Length: 442
Ligand code: PMP
Image (cartoon, rainbow, N blue to C red; front, side):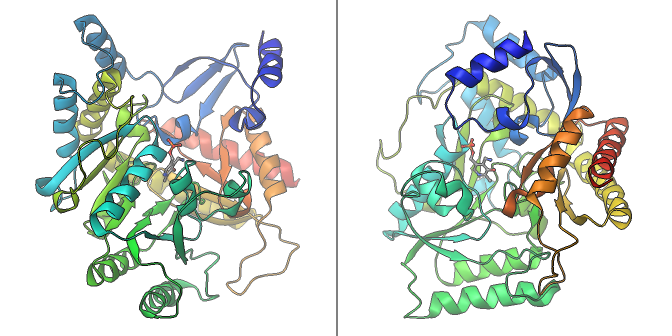
């Protein structure tokens, strides 16, 4: 049946299909990290619903929460009315918030997708400040609706739509150590990115539309698992505070323990003004929220509405996931397994020079593939090799490993396994990546 299902999908679905092109499989069952196709083939899943399955597929606590909610007869869809499930979810979420934030936090339920919450965050800060501009970063990904797309840095995702979205965005350099924006590596490069941002914002002829907000990811996910140094994040906090610009941290992909902190911004000690959350926060069901400092709560009733803001099942699955991650120490576990995997991949880099860079934080890991025949850039990096990366992705799939690409040039393997990954599975993932790369360059 796999062949005919794939064929019918190709014929009937839009040409904008993405993952389905990279992974021509038909999943029938899934448990934890393992996905099984209708043909019985088994795969280790390092995509995890684009990072939304913190506990992997069909985790017992999520299934139990869903079953309990269904059996209770609770209404499944309530717009933004009060429900016990929403109250419980909010309790669970507020218990995870960074210190110094929870006591001043307000939550707004935005709709099913991360991009809805990004739009809400931008509108909230525009309303609160009366300003229109947005400060965003090279390599950023925030979503596919107009404002979120405008804030994204990756040109490739914008070129696919005419116009490229709305918003008066000033783009600032993200500190990407491997392909450093100023041709200087290490802390020197980071400091240059800070100085550039500061000078530009204060330049009366810099062309910066007065910013309502700065929006950033503490680790760029779609951007290729690029980790911002903590000192840079602290500098962005200082720069925005000094200029009275709200700081929005997009935790859609980094949140719920993935980077080895419950929220990635916590590594730096920075307290943001707005946090954007989706993916894992709904336990694998559609949900997106913003949590923000109450002093920005200047919205009039109805300022940002939407039909699907009260998904009872998502609240139940989300609350169960948040509590399980906290209770079972999965945040520390993500840090430890992630460090172990990153170290093994780093060893592999020594043996296979086409692996140009291994980076990440916790279980958000990137392996950038390069063309060693090409010229070195100012930072000593070879050109990215998207063609090689595509062949490695295919070789991984042949070996039963689902791993997607991302990053500038689409040349970075992005490993996003569930936080519940076992030691054995972690070893298996690294081994299959090693075999795939070795097979492709052989
Ligand atoms: N922000 C970030 C950091 C993301 O990684 C994503 C999705 N990859 C989004 C926003 C958009 O989320 P969604 O796809 O649910 O709209």
